[in-house]
Length: 70
Image (tube, rainbow, N blue to C red; front, side, top):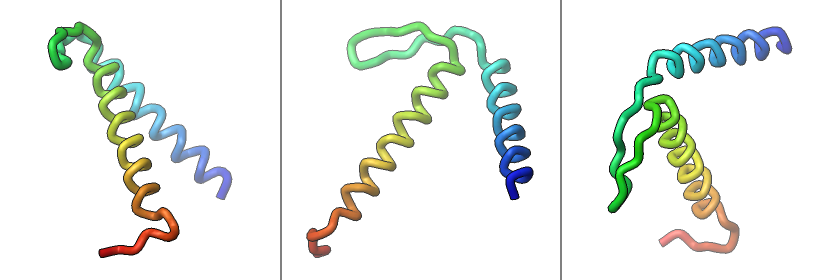
């Protein structure tokens, strides 16, 4: 079981590195009133992290005890 987890983590890490190295070019992104230049890999990581954090917050809010579902 422990060996399987190590293999899964290694495969995911390798895939992440491939994605990062393929997306190193700089892109312009408009954030409200400002234009920011950053690598596409960083933009992907930030977008993923924001979505992940939003999902955790929403699931936490829906599981709060004492709230009745209407």
